Image 1 (cartoon, rainbow, N blue to C red):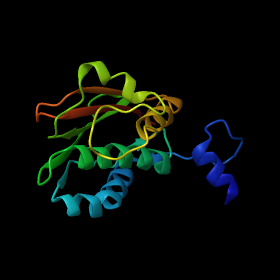
Image 2 (cartoon, rainbow, N blue to C red; image 1 turned 180 degrees about the vertical axis):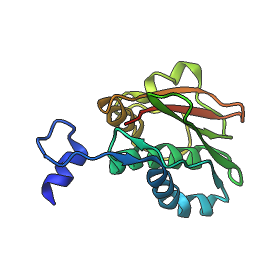
Image 3 (cartoon, helix red, strand yellow; image 1 turned 120 degrees about the horizontal axis):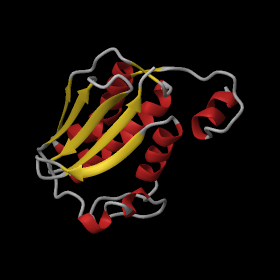
Length: 165
């Protein structure tokens, strides 16, 4: 059990049980983990397709990444609004996952800074400035990438490139 906890937090740990993750399971687990906060703010979480795709990051790590992004979208989006998760499996090497909110977005000047440990954009929502940096690090160490764009819904759009198996 200790080995599993160390492995979850330290990608360089020498645990022998590295696993492949299920995108569908991680999306469903993340939605479930964020459901109470979303309900309290009257926010709907919509997932546009959750294909059974195997990805090259274990399910627990991918769930942590998705929970961070979805929970941030719930907190920073508008009350009574929505969080929209899209999945594109067209690429043979990566699955593209987008998380959009309908909040005020992140100013262009803050878009790189929000990925640094301890840094946050200007917002009234509570946070530590650790989540996005940690989520991006987990994804990058698995060979993926995370980017931040403007959402067509008015808020922020986080774009994940998750390596496929």
